[in-house]
Length: 114
Image (cartoon, rainbow, N blue to C red; front, side):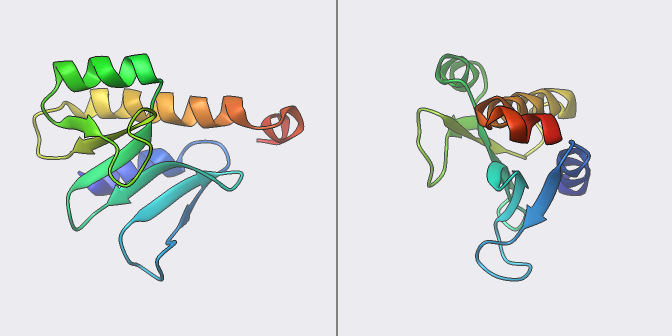
């Protein structure tokens, strides 16, 4: 499933992959204009996504596999366990939301160039 998620993240306009801890080491960071919108821990089987705090709390209440962000601001980031209980479409929606939040935070000139 992670390969589909990586491909989906990289299909976003301006998205690039980076390994902040070194070549091919977890996590894989997917960035737009230098800002992370997804961290994928392939070996551990989860990803971390930015999320509006109210939506983040709702998702955690509704889904056992959505937890506060691992090593991130717990209010603004969620960890999504990839154990199969969440449909892929729901994970794609969370990726879209994370990407949109990061794009909205970019300066206007950067946003327009993406």
